[in-house]
Image (tube, rainbow, N blue to C red; front, side):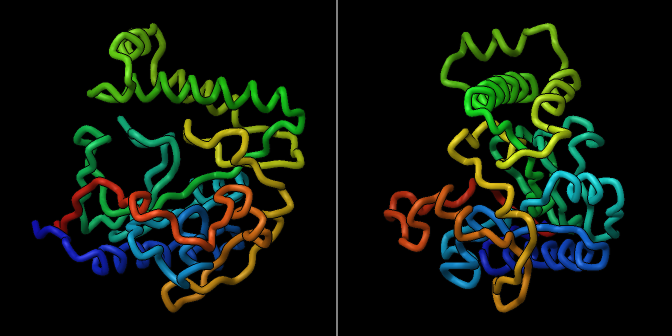
Length: 259
């Protein structure tokens, strides 16, 4: 194996994955949106944030589920579906480049290629108290799941880790409970990325922001993002056009290799 030490080489692999997903979505009428730090980079830098090393996209739940059902990938590109991958650490989909290998501290040896994250966006309750209840329960379920699936303690408390670890409930049961909680059949005025513990109530944004997509430039190419991307970024990050302090300009912790 050859270690990938040049961030530009790593990014070219990721952009290859994005191109594959973009072309598939365009051909099959599926909506996707550059999101999170990738979207900030597109708006502020016309490409990656200078210190960033991954790509994130959102998909409305309906489009996400169709993508999981129908995207077959190729010899080079493989879809990792949380519902079908045994011992899968994550709770959202990824498309990986099968020619590569990534080693991440937090995944405790789970082997995965260089990837792009795909997050579904779900409706959340319009009633604020009910929304807060859902988010509180979501955070707890993800915390328990992480303790169940991790070989090392992801919490500050050793006692809490072992309490959650030894609960008489399986990861499969937790996955079903999480899905029942976050996947809502009825539409509402607000949406959020719900497949991680982290996003809180303040991360919700109007459903009208993802009602359609618009073109956006990223690394010299044209991709898609949500029509209300400015509103989404302001609600999520505040003054997203201002560079953060140097100490907050962090990258992810992993090593990448060519197989």
